[in-house]
Amino acid sequence: MRIRWGSVGYWGGAVAVMAALVLVVKYHPKRPEAVTAVKPIPVRTILVVAEPVREMRRLPGRVVPSREARLATQLPGRIDRLLVREGDAVEADTVLLHIDETGWSNALHRATVEARDADRELQRLTSLSTSGAVSERDQDQARLRAELAQVALVQARFELDRSMVRSPFAGVINARWIEVGEYAREGDPAFHLVVNDPIKVLVDVPERDIAAVRKDDRIPLRVGVLADARFEGRVVFVSPAADAGSHAFRVELVVDNPDNRLRPGMIATVELLRQEMPDARLAPLEAVLPLAGEHVVYVVQENRAVRRRVELGVLLDTRVVIERGLEPGDRLVIEGQRSLEDGVPVDVMDDDPPVERSE
Image (cartoon, rainbow, N blue to C red; front, side, top):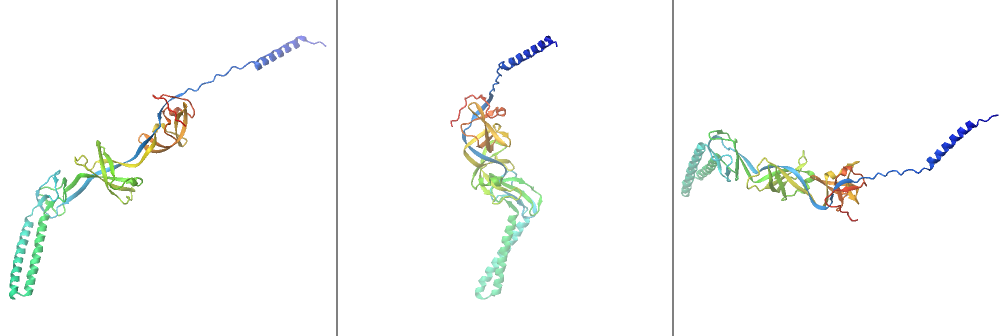
């Protein structure tokens, strides 16, 4: 048998080379992997402090006269004289118009004559009764006639007075619906009389806020067209029952209005004080983030972002009261919070350095 040494030498050499490569790969040291550093996220913060807060409830109100009356004619007839115009200020019991009183004056004159004649006849019969020349029955009839004549005289004076329209109280003529020469029927509208100083503001207060309103309370208010003016109303009436439809309670405020800046028909904003919080913790709305049905904020501790779950309270314009989750001294992130995760490093870009709260 012949052995081919050339073939055996070839395969033996190949095996030796492969074994050497395995040893090189197995024992060659690995290069260290590069560690990627987390870059701090720039943020801005504010210091949380406890501060007094007044929760206000703003409600729309209607400005109305504090007193008003629609005056009408009391007797039919032609308008003879008009003594006031729209805008005139009048005192109580001022005569505003006359209806042609000729017929009423004649009736009064006739009643006056009749009453005088009946009184004279009664006196004559009374003087004759002492001598027995007049019966008791004649005296009784004369006395009855005199009494009826007096009643007719009072009625005639009353009817003549009704030919005039008088102001029931001091105020301003807001409207006049009648002119000289017109024939007025009984009950035709003639004037609208209003009192604007003081003036009233009516406001409907919801059920949940009515406990904050009491009679004689002083309540601030504003009127949109008088943006720079501040007013204060005194509560004079609180409805004892809510409206069946709106479930709101009607509240009336009286406001001093000496310069007549407030006018009926204006819309006012009434500011009710619902509660006072002496040490509230506030956060800007943009600092609060929704997360899985909750609300969270980020605070800075040791240059890292710390997520806090918070409970929100009253909304105050662009800020919100934090009931739980923040304490005075916390550094609250107000810019850059949307890029944060719990525990990531941050770079505080405030003008003043972060103040760490001592535990």
